[in-house]
Structures are given as structure tokens and as C-alpha cells.
Length: 522
Image: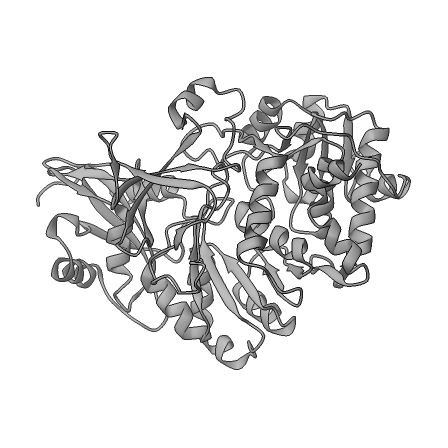
């Protein structure tokens, strides 16, 4: 029986529940009033959900779709399903109907738990799919079971099945911004390896409290807050949706010690410097920015505003998820670097010619947490997985001290008149200008050079600059071939469901502003 608990990701916080049964594990701010959930209650509800699935005839290996916003039940549904050996498929609630329908069909889901208000299409999609078990939060659609009522009728104890180490724990899908989303198979053994390694080398203090405001279906929230905090007995404050001033107020009022998010989150927070100066952040120990390219200039500005260490995190759902992090001797990574290679697992940088480099190339990773394969995509597996190595598609530089610097995606780079241009480098340059709060650079067709960079800029509050000023700044401070040929100004950048800048939508917007015509001249 002991192995059934030890080898099942659904029990990753069981030791904390035994040690701190009456301690608050989660504080849910999604409702009219805060909802505090103790470790004992959370553990019991996990068992109840596992038992409920068993009662409803859902078997180990079956898939269950989840379309739920940020609320504490997300955690019990995801990991309670794992206790029963059932494989949750967490859905990006911001995706369109076609993509959600594809994901449910492709993954072979037989059941669903939904929050109808999280996505306008989800109830209809599940009904159309003919899934045999349908659970929902209020307002419960006709013909569905009420989640809370059904849970309350389930036994408070559950005897978990014995699972093989390679049994799938959950099946997240990529965002699909460049095509149909891909299912990423992640095993119980691999995910537990990562949690245990994290606590072994960087043990956490049970007094810590994290704020999770990015979507729980995304790695940033799960790997950055939920899993590490609950594993060692900390607590997590859950915010349903991100609004800058609300985020800052909660961070202060609930005395959070840690918080993280994608770069767009912190770009918006910096626009609230008046509130930052007025609030008490004395409990705050560190902030982490990651899951997307993180400019050094952004990290410098965040650290200055909050007066605490700011670190860049890097991870990949299918890659561990995290394989680069802090040095064991405590030496901080320079801003612009996401750290050094983890003490367990391997990484290497590979050039376009297939040779290994010590200083620059595509990051390949190999560790127990790497996906054994994309779901039902044998051709993709042949391309991305080589002898246990995952080709991440991310370009990195490494310095003499072993610090890694993210340079962009292999498919982001474009050629402009014979020169390789990386959008991230142009964005970093523009962010050095005081008038630029946020920016996205994309390639557009050019009659002579093939493609050239064009930028959409979000201006910083109280600072003015026109297009010519920013173009001149880039020409004066960077290579001429990489300067943006046009600069457009918008109130905000388009984001995808994970809170990252959606380059596809940026490109569409730029081409619309250009009237769909290729640029010419120099």
C-alpha cells in the first residue's frame, strides 16, 4: 500500500497533510468571501473525488476533461483524479470552440468536470461529444450532475490502484498557436522526480506563502506555486484572474512571501508604481518571472520597484518541466539569465549542423521528467525525441560560469538581407528606452531584404516618444540591420490563454496596419 501512495502524483502533498492537518493549505479568493481549505480537508476531498470517479465507472487510464477557472477545486479535481489513476486533461479556458472540441476528441476523454462560466462553449462541446460522465459547478446545465452534491455523497477514504511508473499522470495540451495543439504525456514517476529533486536541493520553509494569479492550467502556476508549496507544507493564495491593482493588494494583505508570473504580468504591475509605494511588502522574499522571453530590463525594473531579488525561471511542460535553475551555492544568476543546469538530469546545446557547442545552440534536455512522447503523434516524436533527449526548440547562450541565457525560439529567427535577426534581441533593445513599457517584434515581408523587423509598442505612463525617436534609438544603440522599420503604438499587446504575448496575433495586427503590403527601401 505504501508504494501506491509514494508512486502516485495525486499524493504529492500527503506528508504535509499528516504533519500539518489543521494548517491552511489554500486560500481561494474566487468567491464573494475568501475560502480557506486546510490540509486535512484538501486531502479528504481528493480522496472523495477519486472515490466518486470510481463509483461512476471511470477506470485507471481513462481521460477526464477539466474546464475550470482559478478556484481551489481545480487542485482537488486534477490530483484527485490522479489518485484514481484517471488522467486529467486540463483545458485552456480561453481557447475557441474548435480547439477545445479537438482537444477533447483527440485525447479520448470519457468524462468532464466544468465550470460553465469559465468558457461559453464548453457545456455544448461536452454534450455534443457524448461523454458518459458530466459534472459541473453552478449554474449546472440540464442533464449534468452537480459537482459539490456528487462529491459530498462519495466516501471520505479511497484505496488507490497500483500504477506502473510510466502510467500517465496528466495530459496537458500545448497552446496550438502554430497549428493544432499537441498532447504531452507526463508520467507519475517523472513528475514526482521533479518535485522531490526541487525539495532535495532547494528545500522550502513551511511558513512560505505563494500567490497564484496566472491560470492553474498552466505550468507557471503549478510548478511555480501549487506543487512546491503544498509538497513542503506552505500555503497558496489563489486569485481568479489577473488585475494589476488587485494582485498587488492581495500580495500585501495576505503577506505572501513568493509570487510569479509571465512577463506581461510584471509589465502591467510596473504601471502601478503609486500603489507599489503605498503597500507593505515586508513579507515578500522573491519574485519569479518566466514562461516567456524575459528581458533583462524588465527584471531590473521589477527588482528596483519591489526592493527584493527577482529571478528568471525557465521550463517546458514536456521537458521536466524545469531543468535550469539557481546555483546550489546561492550565487544569484545575472539578470537576463535563468540560471544553471539542475544537479540531476542533462542538457546540451546543439548547433544547426548537429554538433554540440559549449556556448550557443538549441537546448536539448534529458531527465526523468521529460515526456515519453506526444500523444498519438509518432512523426512529431521522431523529430523532437532522440535517444531520450528532447529537442526544446529554444535557443540559448551559455557563459563561462555556466549561466544560460534564453535567446528565442528556433522558429522565431528570420533572415533579413543575409543577417539573422532574433525578435527578442530587438525587443530588449527597445525596452532600454524609457518610453517603452512593453513591445513585440515580428518579421514582415520586404521587397529587397526578404523580411524586416516591425514593432508594436506599449508606451510607459508619463513618457512620450514617437516612431522616429524609437527607430533612431535602435539605430544608435544596435545593429542597423535589426532596427525596426516601422513602430506602431497600441494600448496593450494581445495575449494567449497562458498570458504570453501572442505573436501570431501581433503579426496579423501589423500586417493589417501595413495594409497587407510588403515594405520597401532600406
